Length: 206
Image (cartoon, rainbow, N blue to C red; front, side, top):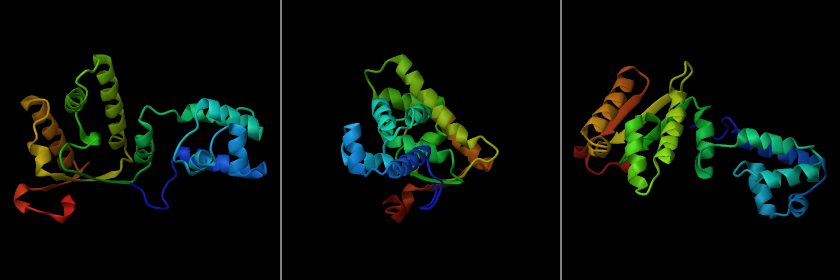
């Protein structure tokens, strides 16, 4: 998704603005870290867009740089419903013109039906609450809407045959899931390839 010089994520723009404001204030990362009460490494992560500050950290940043709540307000707009280690990927999906994905065991999240996703969440969380599962399914469904727009990205999907054979959620759930993938491929919304078992060991599986 994207290239080395591709689109910046919102958190990268946030970090770049933080770096520019820090430099304008004549502060090093070390100096800012002392004022915010954190490590210089954490400031480096913020400026690179790898992490976002907490609301309390953002408040201290505003105080240190005299930015009158600017970074704390912007942070509220960047709050994500995804886990931190996946948030950047979700942001880039919204900007991507090409998505390439390979799956060895399960249908990729962007292609999952509600019932398939629900069956996975329930399997991964044996002590789950129904409302938590409902929330996760909605989040995954909303993420997949990136494929529905008129400027939707080109999606190349390579599946191992095991993905098609592994029954998730029972026969009806699996049949509906496979039908969705097939319909998307037939409609040209998905460029689909399958590595069959008979191919044996294959370089694409590494």
